[in-house]
Image 1 (spheres, helix red, strand yellow):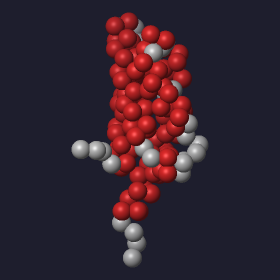
Image 2 (cartoon, helix red, strand yellow):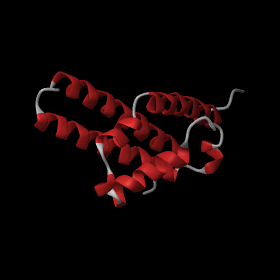
Image 3 (cartoon, one colour):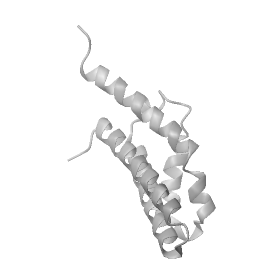
Length: 122
């Protein structure tokens, strides 16, 4: 069964929340090198999930939010999935923070648009 656009946007938002939680855990456990590695792995997994969901969104939806670098997000998924050996902490951390805040805002706006399309005012 295929997932709908709203479900994929929800998946992206859930992954962003998971990244936020992983970062918070990483800050609490910053002295533990094992924890740091686990946090990085968790963030990579969730960035991969975001990229997978983004790749499945239709262009008609993503073009409504041109401020989001949709193709860069998809390429990051490919980097994690196919070129994992090229990843380093700086590359991964460059994809979170402000870029995820913009993505979160865009996903909320797109979900509102989808909801409005599903339930037009009479």
